[in-house]
Amino acid sequence: MIDVERIDFVVRPVADLARADEFYGRTLGLARNPSSDGHWVEYETGNLTIALSEHGGIGLGVPDVEEARRALEGAGVQFPREIYDSGVCHTTGFTDTAGNRLFLHHRYAPLERWNGEVMVVARTDFVGIPVTDRPKAVEFYRGTLGLAQNSRAHDEWPEFEPENATIVLNTPEQTGVPFRPSNYAISLRVPDVAQSMERLKGKGVEFQFEEPYDSGVCHMAFFADPDGNSLILH
Image 1 (cartoon, helix red, strand yellow):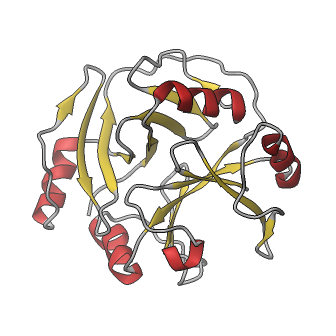
Image 2 (image 1 turned 90 degrees about the vertical axis):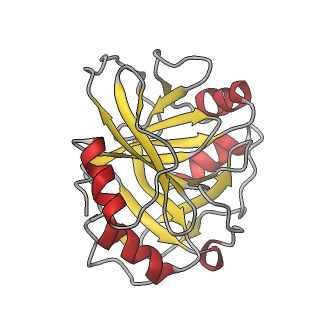
């Protein structure tokens, strides 16, 4: 097991960075980090960074990337490349049992503070990870990665609790979305799901269902970005 402190970022794989930048910034209205460049664009949702780049993945924040990597290698996890030093952080990639891309990540350089505008999206409530074998995935996230499992969550919707955002494991049968590795569903908290739906429909966004879905405890609306990455109003 390793010490995952938080989810540092979720990367959305995009084919056209400018188009995706327009969608997340102007259509969704998220706060754009001014340190973004032509290869890596970041948006902030209060508790979690959403990044746009060529390849998708979830960045798991750990105190020491090399130490965490050794522990996972001892558990049979394979890493295709050496640890990458960007000049501000260490990163190394691997995959879970379903082929979803994950990263061990540690930023050693101080964060540059900036104040974004107050947006309709208050925070990221959870990140949905698509899996095909639920028991096998639960064992990986709980046993191999050492994430704390929420004992109050339903067995068919396993939840894990890093510090800043919840991870939910889901299957294609539950979501109605064909399995595609690293198609993480990011749940964006808004004050009123129906109202936000109408605002986005006015900008050309299409939703999976015409009306908000009522789970009995919350309202949700399912849609996707221009590259087919899943998003949820919650």
